[in-house]
Length: 177
Image (spheres, rainbow, N blue to C red):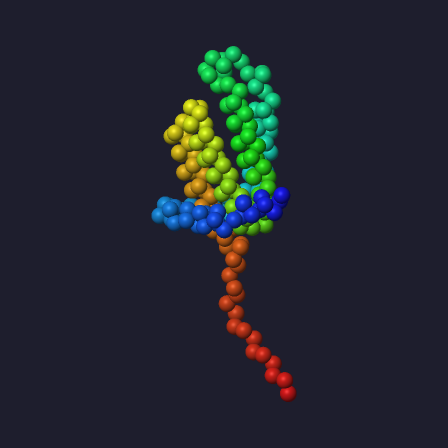
């Protein structure tokens, strides 16, 4: 099961899509390097907090529909709204929690998991739009901000994946006599 999940999450196709996204955002202004390094430093804590909060939010959405007031029914937010939000929140939380340990080690797979959370978040917004519960502008702004920050920190994870080869001169071989 994990092997199949890993083959989907880290597939060659998703890596190609992620690389193409970099070309789209290359002309935007970039954050200072110090900011990026500081974001990457606190990222493990943020991912852990957001992951736990997202899972709890999803579970709360699953369990709390019966406690909602008549106002939500009057506005037209039914049970399906809470179930859709719960499913996406739990999925996003799981992706965040899966990436926590990898982010500590600055592994490229951690960045790919964060990329997946961005994709799932956009899918969540689109589903809410189609069902009539979301706003197009908030969804668009959220997606732009998410992917901007993702691609700003990407270099830290790519650099960790491909460390530079040392520039030192090779040592001469000892000859046998």
